Image (cartoon, rainbow, N blue to C red; front, side, top):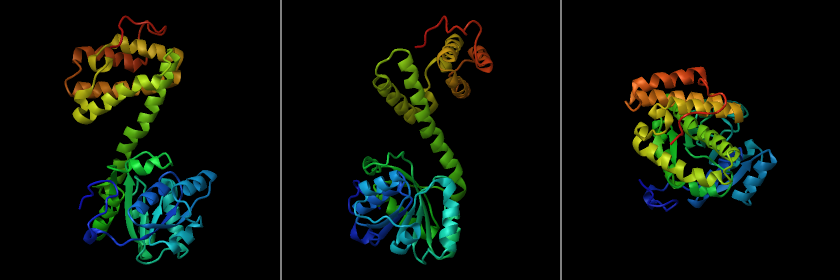
Length: 318
């Protein structure tokens, strides 16, 4: 069952029943998913949120949907999105189940990447139908998120009897379901965090350093470079490695570390750690010559290089 375009109607025989939708936790994710489900014909009926930012997001993405306590969300909705931080999810589920807020036959969906459906066991024992639908996307809390869901992969975990329903909901939101086994959820989530979250840190640090070096528009400089690097990495994996570490240019790497120590010492540990990981991968794939790796790894082991604490070096990065 495939959607030919974001939110295109599915064939009538394949459409799940239209559902009333509630959101517990109006962070960046929940209102966007509910708005996306609304475009597919479902009906948001209740949302809960505490902070001023949550209230504003709910008003912007789900206008005219009442803001009510979590228990009231469950009382009104057939499909409930639990979109709270990972660490808050187990306690929330237990609390809702213990207070009798969960209704038999109710679809209870969490969006945590870390957890599968086991975290919903208290609600399952109360008769709920548990689904884990994690969008592999970064969210802004604005309407642009609804557009970004088009083609977005979702990590899906559900009981076998609910697998088709879970996949259908993802497709209705314009996403692509990717089945993740319960026991693989923590590793799946670690992989996404390693790529996406750390990328933000790396890019932000790079822009700060470029500004320090006198570049007036670091975003414009980095955009084409990082776009090409990402595209090459997705296409070719480790074969896309370039730069002084992959070439074994120990002098250049030592100069980098010296400059970072002078201008941004807080970035040295991250630079060295990523350079070591890059060197290991380049060695393993035959890109870094062993005779060049020895000096390079020595520089990285020291965290600096002889004669480089003043930021000078005989080689220029290419």
